[in-house]
Image 1 (cartoon, chains in turn brown, blue):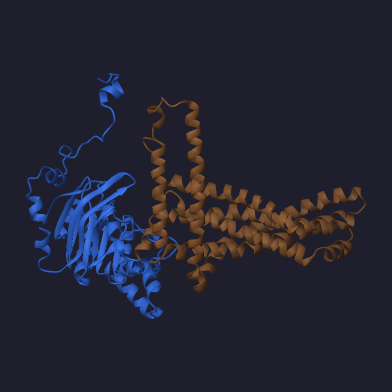
Image 2: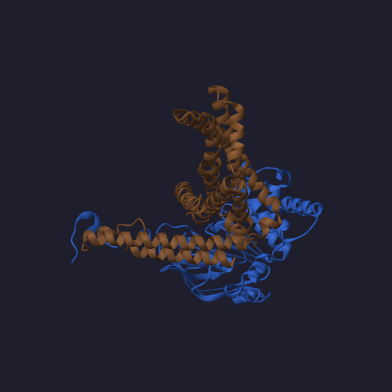
Length: 299
Length: 276
């Protein structure tokens, strides 16, 4: 509760700044009333506010992340709450993940064969498909799909709970909504994401096998044996799992934060949902670069 | 006046010199109220006058900018989060549109608080939930989902949920808004009966004058963040105060202005006249 009160205080500060930015509040006719300021000054003021607002939101999000971690006891102790959310976020995303994985693997099979054939090493197709998937495409594409499918749903659900006063009702019933609503959804996302990425990679490899071996006619023995011999558990698979775990944290954090911070209106929830998908996708790609640089620097 | 009504019983909620502002926009400025145990008190006023804010301050969801709210002798905004939660367990609140959890059945909504706060066996919870639902006439609807309920039924389920742990204080935020005359009467009756059966105190925030005057013991009128009138329903009906008169008899013209204040006059803004 202390955290949600701090959260509200922070929101209030933000609103105060918004109202200072425009003499008649957000959406008012501020510029019309202050024509004496030069265009450049107005652009600078607008830019400055936009930067400070973003920084403020980042700090607020970090504070919220800590609050979620601190109130995770209920989600872990009463694990059936988290399992229920794993079903909604994870289990219901399985179909989209499997179908996408299959197609991505099949495309990899076609493109990989086309390229490898030029160097006469088409039997390395299995290695190419497997490494591309477990090191990069599995975590990244599964992450992007998970953000769109489950992240958006989590944001919309929490945002609507806020808009319909369900969050307030819970607070008034002496139940902490961060512990009861937010934390189980957060942990469900964190747990689901590596499993979905693994399913995506497995299905992708199967797709590559279908196209490479069954359709084009690459030797099945070399497809599998080269893959087994080359793919390293620690360097490739474990690092891929770490990536998907980090992406799971990022997506879930962004999704629950955007939902909890959404303006309690239809428009506010719609904007929050969009922000979840955009911010999660960009964060996944940025984090992927950083993690790749850290993990594979020496090899 | 308030002392007169609370003379028979001790005061449960005491609001002293309470002020609250969202950012720089004042909502409440120095209101005083007393709610005695066992009484049903209405806070009336037009939309946006700070009634709901008062309820949120009593529930500790907002902190006052000045003044204080005491519930059962404890100053709400000074409580730590554990004590505040402890206090809230003895409060029930009915939100404007029920605020039922849409992912749970009627039964689970009513059982929610009991399951969260007690270790009672499921058989006992079952009996308690069905008793509460029976009290609001919806025992037969226990397996429905909130989306399958009418507005009036949802409000009654929310009422059953609000009294699930037999609170000492029940707060109602616009309980009559958007209801048909039959549902409105049912909710009005339930507010009074549940209050008396539980020996609780109730605060009803409303602008439905006729229904609430039938069931309440005392009324506070709030306008522009101040208590402008108070008294028993009979006293208020007989009042000659222009604001109270306008409100109770629902007159369009009176001390409450029709126009929201504008920066410029009509002549300047719309007819092209120049200042000065």
